Image 1 (cartoon, one colour):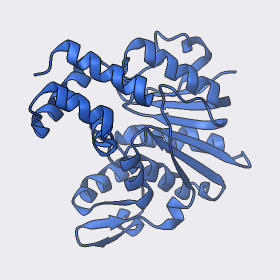
Image 2 (spheres, helix red, strand yellow):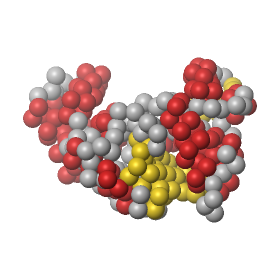
Image 3 (cartoon, helix red, strand yellow):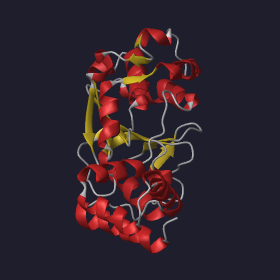
Length: 269
């Protein structure tokens, strides 16, 4: 196990040399991930690990990717998607053009889920989905739209529970243990790297989804990211968070109204 001061040195190197600021991520989660790498890669000393992080671009990529969290699935929390389907998308239908930002999109399963909702609502043709993540490798997977066939049974069940009425298998083609979703969905997506810690707003959006990312940040960074989302949302826009995340206790609470009991809030002004 690495000492606390070793963890501090690595985080300082990442920020000073590369601008990656993990200092406001939850400490326990970061420490667990760094120690996992330490054990997996069997460095003879901490000095060797630090040297590789500071000087080896390929290893730096691996290190940063391991520190970011990439757990996702299609139609995760089906009732959340049901609320998107029945309460949120109909209110966006009157807009001539819809912009959606999926921040921390990981490998893209939830982006494709929203694209399917938009297609079924007849809104996909006038929507752009901006899908961003710090991790370039997962972004490339998201861009390809190829997922493991083994997950499709669960994803199909999630889809039905979200109110889906079609045969979910019609949305993909399967081959050699993987499935690929059609370009009809991905051609409305724009994939790009974005660092929630250091990058600024880049457009005005009608809906921002950032699910199960804030739970890895401390309170200071959570407040920073929520202000970034607030600056990026247009009037009466929607903000969607993960099941364990909330706007309560934030400075934004009084300017948003929660939709039903799901973690979706509408901006009031």
